[in-house]
Image 1 (cartoon, rainbow, N blue to C red):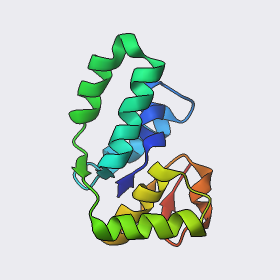
Image 2 (image 1 turned 30 degrees about the vertical axis):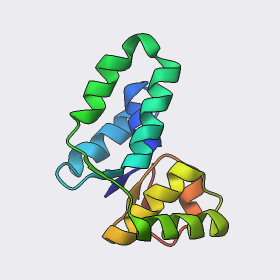
Image 3 (image 1 turned 120 degrees about the horizontal axis):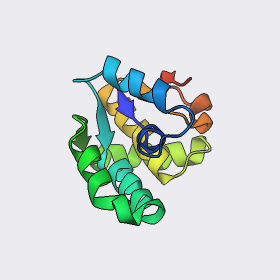
Image 4 (image 1 turned 180 degrees about the horizontal axis):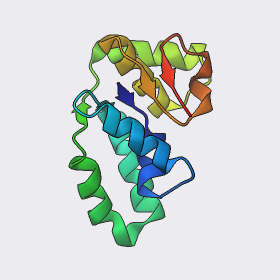
Length: 123
């Protein structure tokens, strides 16, 4: 299962769907992956929103057990195509591309994924 940025942010910032997100992460432990583009997006938002907690939050993300996957040429092509086909931002395009390549679902709180042709797990 591919983890979208929105899931980690909900957990780290204790947002409304945090408990739901934690339950899904726990249920799928060992098979979670995230694009390093989404990792960068997460780290940027952590530094922006909680600079005083950044080091602790970064440690939590990196120690979460999620396998971080760097995009390759094929994922870049899929992401570019997705940007034109769906209303996805750059990070979302790479979450989608990783899900396509790895033939798996996307765990997200972002409703923009509703139109994609991959299985999407949302509350």
